[in-house]
Length: 320
Length: 320
Ligand SMILES: NC(=O)c1ccc[n+]([C@@H]2O[C@H](COP(=O)([O-])OP(=O)(O)OC[C@H]3O[C@@H](n4cnc5c(N)ncnc54)[C@H](O)[C@@H]3O)[C@@H](O)[C@H]2O)c1
Ligand SMILES: NC(=O)c1ccc[n+]([C@@H]2O[C@H](COP(=O)([O-])OP(=O)(O)OC[C@H]3O[C@@H](n4cnc5c(N)ncnc54)[C@H](O)[C@@H]3O)[C@@H](O)[C@H]2O)c1
Image 1 (cartoon, each protein chain N blue to C red):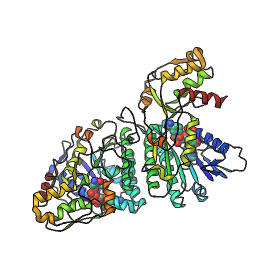
Image 2: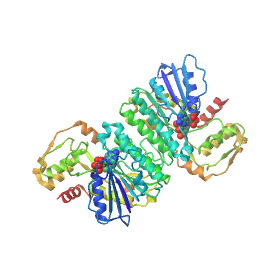
Image 3: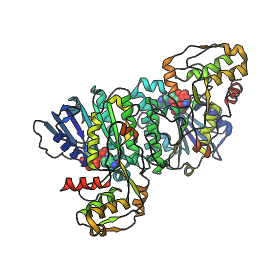
Image 4: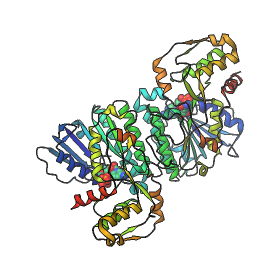
């Protein structure tokens, strides 16, 4: 089993690599080879008996991926991306990384005869938008209101078409908002959703820029990584007529997040959260749907978090 | 008012040009200039007081459209395309004409500062597919099961994103199956839908390859051309959060088509239709949705045919 990962130095990439190495197998086969690809050199990993290649490259440069594809990986995780704020600030950059790189990868798989290669891509809740129904389901249109979401939606269509034509075996997982991300706040509009839990749990102050009744559709990094694993293990013909679907996140309100924080870490922790409304952030985040039925993902065996408390506990355990 | 049209030598392009010239105005302004673009040289048109430029070019060649965009057309109709069968037979060709050409056009509009230019593109019912609900509405997902539909869906997303960013003023009309096309049968899977009416109306034999209970969502060429006109006349901010929607076709079964034929042209005409089931054609056409609510298009003032009889009468009148 040879696995190649683009964006391997990123948040999910690093966690996926660690999990693959701790499992040792994927789809019932021993992992013999890992090819880690990122713009920044992927960190060294301890990997007994696994041949690990770490490549620093811009995957949007023509031909750069060819030597990797020539080695015929069994599974490719395509996680390289520029996030929503960056794609909104620079349309050409977002198109190149979030769409053209997907296309180059697909054309490369075709050229190298990788019809059986399982290509797993991460899409996003940000691909939804417009006049959404109360509850979003698997047949709700993607009408993205940001360039990142549009680029992800275009990539989904292309992966589905290449898969339908039998040129690759693609599967695209739409990720809910991930909480709790470890580390520091970042420029993402959703950054507060991790911050208002993470910072107080670590005894630090945090700012909540949105009203307490705002709801979000969320998943822990641990469950997202499990979903990436499961996404590669599924048989292609189980996937039916469209290769992209939403993962089973859970719907939580900011009020529930704060109440869970209080239950876990007490009133002192809750008092560390300052409410400072930011209409710009509220506008972006409230446009993302928060209520889904994720029938296809559940039928395919994907599993989300039980409840918010489980997410907080998983964070405390992982970071302890 | 300066209007540029790609695919101007095609079926709809030629009819649109004729209609624009017979109206003389668009969006309340006199048409002063028409730029007709196609791979094959657009036919000469009689146009009093309108400056007509006819350009034979491959619009997918880099830079070819620049001289046209430099003249800052007020309206661009983007109709150039390769149809479904050709796009399915040649993935690279379909991607180039049905998607890359749209992108090049959008990037060109951006580069030439055509933020106010109204860009009208024709998408298709073939962009729908997968596990569709009984009745499709404006928020039903596009999960195309053919490369043509995937390329159209990707173009829709890109036009919407460029419009949302204020780089162009796009609008995309998803066309129902067009009946009755004049002329001869072609390679399109839907060709029979025109043939089984047109040929008997002209005293010729036709083959019906699908079961009589098959339904289709259809529109006459006349109403499609009116919709293209209306699509350019709408104010951009009336279009809301997504720039693509289905036109108000009507749902007709093959049985109704044959019964209308009998009413118009008698039993002798009906007897000219031979039933010869073709599972390949049935499979393709029955995958297209036939029942829609087209609320957005109706609210925006688009109008379809009253009934099938009107479509037949319009054909007889136009071809008489
Ligand atoms: N809920 C969501 O919407 C959501 C959440 C998380 C992740 N995602 C998606 O999951 C994937 C991984 O996300 P993440 O949180 O780990 O992001 P990340 O930003 O931490 O990682 C992305 C990696 O891609 C790399 N990269 C960017 N451009 C590249 C290029 N041209 N060539 C090579 N490498 C390049 C970056 O260096 C980075 O290491 C992304 O596709 C992201 O869009 C979606
Ligand atoms: N129901 C539907 O699905 C449906 C029906 C009709 C039309 N449409 C769409 O409407 C539009 C017009 O359709 P039509 O029936 O007139 O098709 P058509 O094939 O008659 O016309 C398309 C024109 O585009 C031109 N063209 C193709 N590639 C080109 C290139 N690289 N550079 C320049 N010109 C090029 C062709 O020469 C042709 O004249 C198309 O976009 C089509 O996809 C959809």
